[in-house]
Image (cartoon, rainbow, N blue to C red; front, side):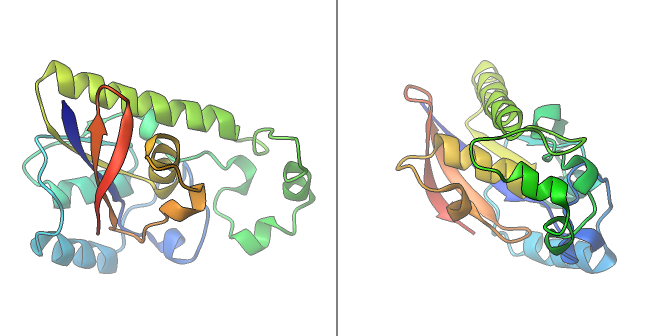
Length: 196
């Protein structure tokens, strides 16, 4: 049995539009992004869903509510964004000037961000999120699933489960963009059907 899973990136916040690494910082959408979200949702570009999962941030819940207005999102803590710790709220140009970041980039070392999350732990919880989503869909005999979450979560899941394999950076999508995919329950692999 194949499951149809739609991954949608949240609408932008003020910090996101400024290029800040928000991570666990919980900003609401701006009025401009709410208007853009309503316009895109009205165009009917997002595949339908029988169940919706989301990270618990305001930006994801507001996005999910606009895309799937009659379906409250189920919050999965595993769909929370990467925790940038002490680098949260800063731009990339600000963190590359921080010696702690250059220390973090030393080859062969993959520690947690200072005060934040280790990349391997994040990858593990993204995998756990997908397994939970699949189990719940199968238990409820649901074939169409919406997942409204953060770019880092989408990229990690697709990098890990899509065939053919691709680089992590290849899975970028703009705000309010995403992917429709088929999940094969026999092979635990995702195959992209559409990018929007």
